[in-house]
Image (cartoon, rainbow, N blue to C red; front, side):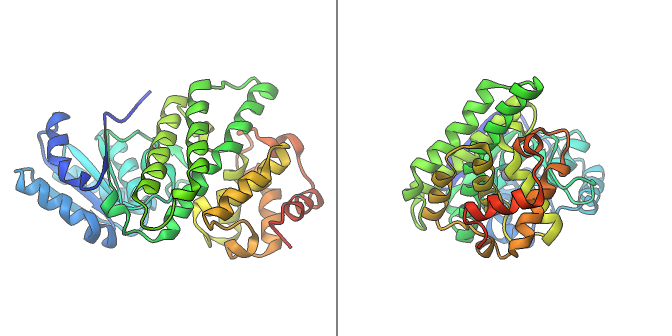
Length: 345
Ligand SMILES: [Zn+2]
């Protein structure tokens, strides 16, 4: 079980990076992985801070998280031999840093600039070119430095997406329990409870999650970090990824990402809850409260693509047993579920 050793959350948290380096005993040089925007928003400050504290630092700019980017970072690691990698960004940069550091046997520090999904704290990475549309186990961050002043500058839509990702844990945990009951799969009560608690907290505080409300951002941030920890404890994405995530991955394959990951998972969670016989209206109402999409139109996809994705979802990961695998729905049954929940017209 790998867990983060330091989690610093709050206004101006970035300023504490040199102190964290010292506490963690990281004495060598550092390397920053960032995108163009995330470098401007936070990466440059991390660089200046490290250099001002006598820590030699290099920067690798990436714009995506493909296997090509990961190889490029790995080459830079071999050349510069840093003792730690900083992933600065909204998700893809962190994923690229996560995978390349793990491949090269280095620790990495997550410095999120947006809260769009739980990858900012999880031990899993989603990288294009690995041949899998879902995330794979890599390594947990050694530390998470989440500066709410930086995060507050991200587009509001990323916050909505992050909420969708957290709320979707309701159906993920139900699927996990189902896999234990039907397939005798290992089920971790502690990891499941942690994921569920995060979803409940976001749901209960949905009213606070409004632009300009620091407290609301903090609720979401802590929930995302807890989800990451839940996956570290479980040793897989099980507590945080069930049929609703399979639906989102299928939609990505059909449409190439049109909407954000958490937006798609939120809609997926409405459908999954309906199929699970759970309270899908509560999930839909909470998503509405935070202005997250609850329909195909809201996601910017065609009705028929929602039906197609729901039908295809179980085939994305045949080994990850969910309600979709149990029900083995026909096209008509998928259409009925999408219609009855108002996801399609
Ligand atoms: Zn997710």
